[in-house]
Image (cartoon, rainbow, N blue to C red; front, top):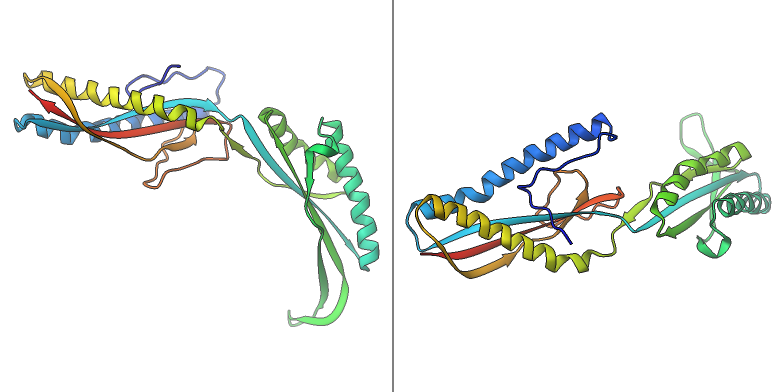
Length: 257
């Protein structure tokens, strides 16, 4: 497995839209700023002739989500609860039929309990009266799928149910990468190597050599959309995008000879 360092130039396809190129430009620019921040303290250590150098190392891996979750809600309004339940059952049948046509049979669909809300007449002054004007019933449908491209397509096309007289709202899908634990050791190793390479470059410029590793401290992992410059002291786990970047930072201290 290849782990990309921040120092490497990121290449993107000519097929990507101009917006993606602009985002990548910000990503690279931020990378240069991060690199300068990473080496600044270490340069001062080496220049001062100290017997140690502390420096940060960075590594990232671009991945694709391999699990998605999507939810949608259909709603009916009726004068009575009984009529509302009948209408909701009819809407449910249309929704399940649409999902089945997309390859999602009933066994893959999770239905929530029915939510029923009483509607009251609004008075001229804007307050609610005690007069019941009807009922609003809704139910949520949820899918989980490893085929994230199919789920993404469904989340955008399911509103076609409106043409079938179904009041339907599609929530934004959420995308996850389930292999995060398997990447952590590789990323930490690559980040440590990156830190050592930076330390060696600084030491060489000062006529010194990097010695043994004295200490290492792991930072939080970040899972962001790709490309993205987002970071957080507490870590980020992006669920809005299929393409993601898993990022690791370590702080290491080397002896200087």
